[in-house]
Amino acid sequence: MGTFFRLSVVASAGVTSSLVFAILAFLLYFASPLFQADLFFDFFTLRWDEKAHAYGLLPMILGTLYISLLATFLATLMSFSLASLIDSFLPQKISRLLESIIVLLCGVPTVLYAFGALFLIVPFINEYIASGKGLSIFSASFVLSFVVLPTMSVMFLNAFRSLPKAYKNAGLSLGASPQELFFCMVLPLVKVEMMGAVIFGFARAVGDTLIALMLAGNALHIPHSLLDSARTLTAHIALINANDYESIAFKAIFLSALLLFIFTCSVVLLVRLMQKRRNNG
Amino acid sequence: MAKSSQTILVVCFYLLALIALLCMAIFFGFIIYKGVSALSLKLIFDDTPMWAALLLKARVFDGIFNAIVGSFLVVSLAMVFALPLGFLTGIYLYLYASKKMRSLLGFLCDILSSIPSIVVGLFGLSITIFLHKNHFASLFPSLIVSALSLSVLVIPYIIKMTDLALMGIPKHLSDIGLRLGATRLQNLFHVQLPLASKEMLSGVILAIGRAVEDTAVIMMTGAVAMAGIPSSLLQKYEALPFFIYHISSEYANKEQLNQGFGAAIVLLVLSLSLFWVAIVLQKMISKRSGFVPR
Image (cartoon, rainbow over all chains, first blue to last red; front, side):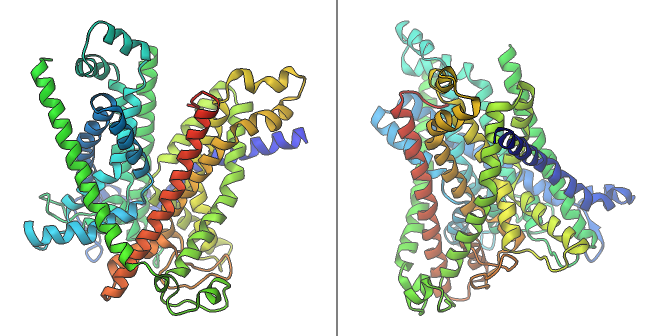
């Protein structure tokens, strides 16, 4: 019994830890024909047009960057405000209520945000701001910021609360107001945790598929303004045409996935390094 | 920092928070208003009698019943694969792993949980294509492929929650069996797992919620708009989030759009109640023993 249990425990640990490598291996396997051809660097050009045999991924890379950077910026502003109000400035009853609402919002399905926005924000932009520009970088990143907001707020809150209670008491007994305490003591001490929250939010924004797929318009060109339509790497993968396994267009999908994979690994590595450096210093 | 500029910043916080809350309120008000007015038994079962549909005697053609059943099937199947693997790996981390192994597995787990779900879906699709070409010509994107891919998505959550739950047991409780002469395994099954069970359950519920709401994985691996209830693991199926996605681009008339809103409300209530149960469970744990398992 004991050895059997131990065996199955070790075996499942082996299986789960090899999943990451399995994903990497399959992406590489399907993308590998692209590495051998001398057309590899053509993938990092500005044009995707299957009829003209141009398979540049840069429009999608730029689309991803624009949408997720803007979304992270908006989400950081809002979630930082919410978290700091909850932590230091609101009366206890209200801040408790607000916190439960935000925690509950973490459980809202992403597809709902996209679906609701499609019939609320997109018509609004079409009607009042710029007609025909409803499906654009702006709508996608605006909605995406609300998708990331709850999780980011919770992470900011956890950051503020990671300080030992004794610090706060010491500050209070020296006569500092809650406001001074927050700006002069809490903020400088939790810089690394706050950076972690922002990076995490950015990674989530990059990895999200549905919002960009449904709200950004998926156009295949380099976006020039906020109201331009754009396509992200994730949406590009979702719009795959799986009927033709052998085409270069299909293989380029795996290159997009590989880019996302590398991005994810570097983010996780970066956060780990930051935590390690802080713990040592 | 000068006091006046601090005050200005705090005013900005209030403004930004107010804007955020207002947007959220308008958004959810809109969804709930539209959705609740679309809710009815007809939305779910169309014209098929309810009991005949529930007992699978009559087929529902135009309701969201098939999508609900499909979601239920694919998520339960995913949990069947994910739970044993996740639990056992969590126990390995807690009981057997050396310090180096722990940090390595933790790292891999972090990567797995942050890989975009569309990439996980593509992984499932590429395995299917590979097997289809080389070994099983009859394998296409289907219920089983979706379930396996979804389990890849939730396994890291289950591992983490299991490990955290076990680590959160206070030291004086977790070693009690060992001091009474029990083996490590007996201690695990009779002391540690029962103590950690509630938090593990809340982790499982969170994982279910994650699997129910995910759209990107299932749209790559076999969810379609019109399939009925699948009769085998190798068939395509319908799912609630995919239905919502599909309606948003393909709706032909107001009635179908209303169906979309109704489905949205059903999915919202489903995910939020799962999430809420998980939160309540976690609150109960931190109250019960006077410690916060974190």
